[in-house]
Image 1 (cartoon, helix red, strand yellow):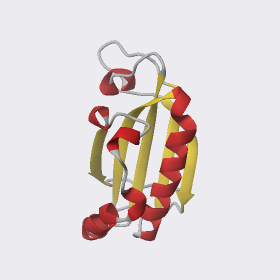
Image 2 (tube, one colour):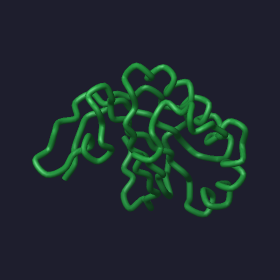
Image 3 (cartoon, helix red, strand yellow):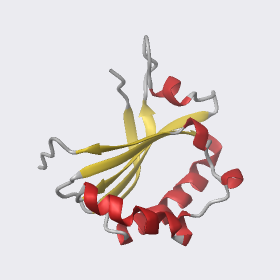
Length: 136
């Protein structure tokens, strides 16, 4: 089991029933936190405009080293990097799949890989179907 605590740095949209969650774990240089947040805020707008319920970006707060694996090993952080855990909540898998081509073509989602504030090759991405969603 990989566990850790993360501080929310962006929470946009509304919590609600989630049909699927698209998540990512990244290593971001601590010195580029503001750059990362600016990029995330642009992307959040695009996701929400495309129909996502909610976009959450979190910055490592209490992410311990594990005995066999952990978040740091998963994305191969260096001493000057922090782990970011982010996700997008979608009402359904079908909606996500139908808007993805348009979303990825959106100007807000177009980045020069050399200017990204993280290394895309060390990112872990996946989409998960919701099996339990208990609100307050």
